[in-house]
Image 1 (cartoon, rainbow, N blue to C red):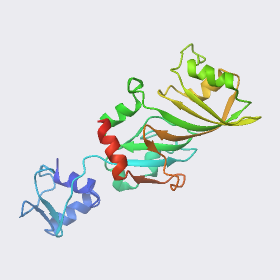
Image 2 (image 1 turned 180 degrees about the vertical axis):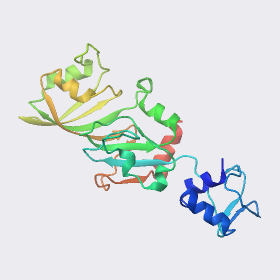
Image 3 (image 1 turned 90 degrees about the horizontal axis):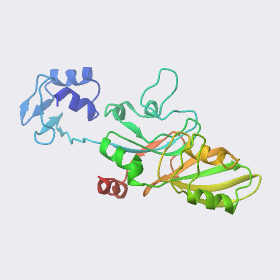
Image 4 (image 1 turned 45 degrees about the horizontal axis):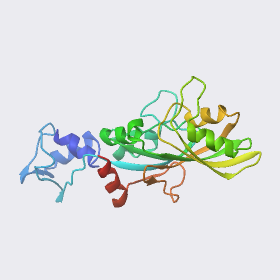
Length: 237
């Protein structure tokens, strides 16, 4: 990895900022003053020190976001604001991506990382990692709906969804439910309820596998995963 890219990724500023540090002879690689930002280093083997502080290399970042409505789950978009736009420049430098899609109007748990293997394991239908949502439904949700979801709902394009767990929290004109699915078809939860003549009017993801939304996170904010959450992710890998 180029030295200037390493330092930029580790939060020492832009490439221009790093160039200034090099000019001031504040960067050392294995005890030798570094003068060229294009110099290749092995961040896991070489000792890099900036202004007396050793650089601790991180290959991956793992961020939990409470996604707000009105923002799309994408890395870049010409018209819409993306979840990556909500990150600091320091985190953006890692070129992370959202794991799994949340619709523009859907809130809640979103994992953002640059670990592609973990992303695959969390979203692959073959892995059957449960995703739990809280929803408000226009219409009375019944026990027959619970059974239908358990068997596997057939949605509008003829696809039969995998069995889903549907728990009724409150059943009236606007019902409240929790649903756990193990796949992530486009607008899947909304289409499943449309298949039984009902409409999702509010949707929030609460959990992916054992990763639970930190309710202390305000909409649009995020934090790095804690040790317990990181251990869970590492076990998935």
